[in-house]
Image (cartoon, rainbow, N blue to C red; front, side, top):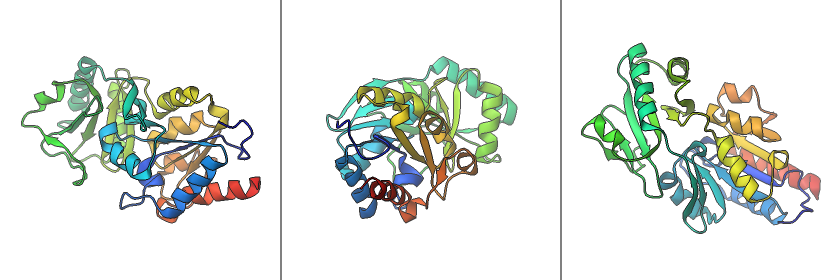
Length: 272
């Protein structure tokens, strides 16, 4: 990588859903061009997504992306060009089961899904859990199937509580056992304790010889908070959760209006 990149940031970290991806799960030509221009200027682009590798791989392949990607909320560092996992962190299933029991004791039954570890890990969905219909899942006959193989995270939904309240309660009663984050509408997750997007991003950056001070990060949801805290500059999308906007260094236009490209084009113009 060039050490004389004209951009003020040598590492561009982008979330996918609600950030780089538009509502139809595509990346605009303008965003592709802006990222290509930034990488041509010497910066590295790292996708940092809550999606596990099986749910992210098709999008990365469509982008022609062959670098490192941080997947599964930081649990997986994936080499897209070589189609292999470099690091993988799994959720302690005994602790996760205890956390679920404590949460259900507080608020009653919850709807569950689970993301299995590995390049080909399935997402298991229990009765009542609402998911995006375009994503491949395996329907469980019984919740005991949750524990049949190593997991990188669990997904929770509740019949009455909204996402913010569910995440708050889960963190309050089980936050000493597991990590809790909210990654999007209907997406409250239990993770290995201490794991975040910042964990995976720091590992990926170190492999590239880069550090937090080199990094500009783009995101839209509370699961991006640790990444913003780690990076030198955090940019929230116009459509971002208020909690993320509150700590962002700037707010750009929405994912539908090429918010990443707007910022990168400005930086490239200033460096020209």
